[in-house]
Each structure stands twice: as C-alpha cells, then as structure tokens.
Image (cartoon, rainbow over the protein chains, first blue to last red):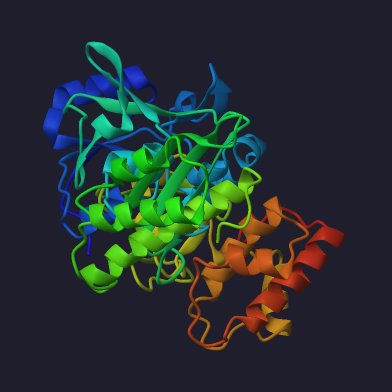
Length: 293
Length: 165
C-alpha cells in the first residue's frame, strides 16, 4: 500500500527546513531516514500532507565529542555509530544499541534522532536516551532550546516538539572512567521491535559503591520508561546480587505493557525485570565487578 | 514531481507522485523487475538496492523522490560486459539460491557489506545478512557464496558496477 498523497520538499539547510515547518506547521513532518515514518505513512498511521526531507543537509550529519558529550546530528545514520571507535570505546551502552537497533540494512538509513522523535514505546533509542541522560537540541523560529530526554519523550509517538520545531541533535554525556552501561533487548527476530528492552548506566565511586544510576525500560508502557525506584535503590548501594534483584523487581513493577503478538503483559513485565538484571550484570562486568550473574 | 536519477549508470527522468516508493519506481517506471517486493514493510530485504554506490537501502521504504540526483545500482547493474559480478558467480557456484526471490537483495546487501569489510568472518557475514530473509536455502550456501566472493573481490578488485550496457 502506498501512503496518502503528500507534497515533498527537499531542504538544503536547517534554515530552510525550519522555514518550511513554520509555513506548513502541523501538516508537515521532517523526513530523515524514513525507516519509521515511511512504514507509519504506508499503514496510514501517519498522514502528513508535507514531507520536508533533510537528507541533503550535510551539516546535520555528524558524530563527534564536544564539551564532554557525544553529539549525534539529526542526519546521522545508525550505521555510523556501530563502526565508530569513539562510540565503541567510550559509550558502551550506546554501542550495544547500535548493533541491536533494527537490522544491518535498515541501520544504513535510519537515524538516531529520528528514532527518538518517533517516540515509539518499543524503539531502542528512547530507552538509551533516558538511561544515558541524553539531551535533545531542538530548533524553531525563535531559536534553539535543549530538553532532557525525560521532558522530550511525552507519550506514544508524541514528543515535546512544537509543530514548528525540529530536532537538530541528541547529546549523550560522556561516561567517566568509572561509568559504564549496557543495553539488553528481547526480540523475536533481528529487526523486530523489542518484546521488552532495558538500558542501564552506572557510575562507581572510589569505594566501589554505585554513585549514580540510570535505568530505563522499553516496549512495556506508553513510552520508554525511566525506573526511578531502581535508580534510587542502586544509588549508594554496593554492587550485589540482592540490589540487582531489587532493581529488577522495581522494573517489573514500573512496567505496564499490553498483551500482543510479542507476548502477554505478564510475560513482558517479567522480561523487563530480567533484562534490567542482565544489563546491570553486564554494566558491572564492564566496570570490573564480576560474579553478579 | 520530476525525478532525475542514475540507475546502473544510465540517467533517467520521470514524472511521479512523491508517494511512489523507489522499489515500485524501479519496477514499474523503469521496468527493472530484478528488484523484488516481498514483505513491503522493510523486514525481508529482497528489495535492497545500492544508493550512491555505498549504502544498501530497502527500496520499499524509500520514496523515489528521495533518490533524485542520486545513483542507484540494482541487480541488473552488477554484471559487466556479459561477465557475472563475482557475487553473482559465487551464488551460482555455491548454489546460493533456490527460488531466487531473495537473491537480488542478498547480493546488493553483500556488495555494500564487502566494500566496508573486505575480509569478513563467517559470523560477520551472517550478521550483515540478518536483515535479509531467505525461505529456501537455510542460508548455508548464501554465506558460502559471500565468502567465495569476498576472496575473489579482495584478490582482484573489479570495476565499480555501472551500466547494464
């Protein structure tokens, strides 16, 4: 099936894209990789009457570290991350996502920022953005503003973007030497949406206790969910099987999935806990703390 | 809307609706039916074509207008001067196909992959092809074919795939 009719505009600069958004407002959508938007349009779940293609804006295609953060431009494709030494060496949780999101061909088109803007509750990048305490830079006619992932991801397929705004960049703070993370995902096959997923990021203090924790789960609620209770349990605790179990239980409690072809609500709640535990074990291993499995 | 693009080295210009998907553009506007449409939802990979010579894309999930000004390579553009591309020859030699439906996508995905990773391990080949589904072969011979082609391409670089003739 083909999507409903729309007008196609190709923006050659961010200025042009923002001007087009200002003109067409809620009728328009930004088109980057199209790997979520085009299927949504084909199923008539999305019906924009104008598409503003930003693929020709080379200025938006970057992956670099500046000011202590990894900056990913709106034009940067998933595939750029999995082969980036910067990502694989310094951002372990993101590196995990980069080889699990979609499939290897879709990753050659799909973009990180586009996935976050799509705010699919089963998408992988929203979960990572919460756990990694990412910020999203958006631009509208009045200039740019920066939102936390928590504020940006509002609901299923809904973000804090105003009709005349576009997302320019996502920023992941650089994990310190004593910080690592992991992403775990249960999927029926490569390229499927998650049945459930979990992203965690932990910082240890000099005594080996957990100083800071980010825990988020995906595909088990209306949007990617932060598990604040798990974060509180972990913060200040020495790594142990008990605290991992408690954090996993908090994730089971936070999860509020629906039953569908990927599994029953009960199963997905259970998996949210299992995946949080697995991700915590793997993050701790990466921090040199073994024996937690 | 006017679309001007190069497919397998030949320039084409057509007037199409923006909602026309690239796979359908190739098949119905240009008659290049080697690009197959399977799941039509970017899951199966049999519509994969090469975008600007480097990026494997699922052409059922790209609008033809997005390819305006760009170069597309389809399976019809792989053979050069009557000689099969090393990947095509390898699929033949290794029996890397049975019904052949997934084969164009498998080969185009592999072309892009082998450019980035000329000496892949078996595991890397399986990973690279994990977005392409085959219902006949059990993948064994597809993987063997890509291994054979990798060896040949690395030993003797061939010209970039361009015109059908």
